Amino acid sequence: MHVDPVHTALVDHLRLARAEGVGPVAWRRLLGRYGSAARALEALPGLAKTGGRSEAPRVPSAAEACRELEGLRALGGRLLVLGQPGYPAILALLDDAPPVLSAIGEVATLSERAVALVGGRNASANGQRMAATLAEELAAAGLVIVSGLARGIDTAAHTGALRGGRTVAAVAGGLDQPYPPEHADLQRRVAEGRAVVTEAPLGTVPQARHFPRRNRLIAGLGLGVVVIEAAPRSGSLITARLAQEAGRELFAVPGSPLDPRARGSNDLIRQGAHLTETASDVLDNLPDHPSRVGLARAPLFARAAPEGFGEPGPAWEEPAESQATLVAARSQVIELLDASSTAVDDLVRRCQFSPAAMMAVLLELELAGRIETLSGARVALLAP
Image (tube, rainbow, N blue to C red; front, top):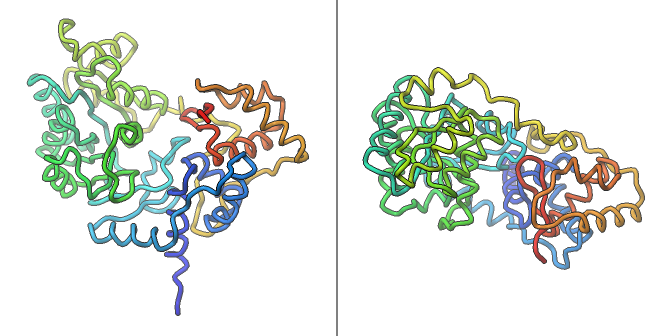
């Protein structure tokens, strides 16, 4: 019986991405250390045990991964793997780029010049008109409009973009779970108008914990983010922060100081976001490439993606320290961390262990579920 090595490698990459405790940074480090997803999967239980986990992490079986791929194909979608053809080049620049994406539509659109439009769900009529007009004019100028398929500003942005050109929706749940449910037809039209993309596997019903990942996708797919009517502590401001961390250009439409829905976007303008009233305000200030600011935050941990299925990944330097020293390093890291995030560079300076030792220790602790790796090369201790 013929075994397709490319399909086998695709299944292995998907299994590793869906494995319990394996986040985007750990996925890259595992491929860098072991050279292939198959070898990384073999090593995963031992690494997690070394980090302090009592039970092996849950890893989907090959059959489960195949069923996910088959279901995706039945929808007319495909899986995009970091470092492989079709994966959005601009997204791959992020230090925590998603290992795999599920997409439906014309996936090449995900790599074209784009800008994101985000804002409140309970947007005013004027805010929605502004979003639709901006999206239509920016799309007509050749930009792909990225948004999140939510009610309010997102809906207006997608609708306007479909009139003017192309749009992409980044969603929180599985591609077979449109959210909100009444937007099933809008999701279909966006897929026909270009593409819908998600990090979530099929069958995932969106929950609050899924939306930060969706916001990261929205921020990462564009050269900039335009915020319209964002209240304080809203998800749109999270997207704006992620965009700034990723070196994207930030724009905000001003609103009435008497309208609480505009306080967040007005604050962004005070903090340096481009005041945006017309499409020209975006077109005149949108760069050709992302700023390098915010991208090279992890000099100790290379962000290079694996170049081919089954091929060696980025170089991994095994620590020269003894096992006893690594045990001491793990203990010191746990003592120094708490629930607030700490920069990895600061942690290394305080611990005085080699970068290679810290890379090994942090990987083991993440796989054991004892720490969380955050964007911007930061880590935080998880509650036991």
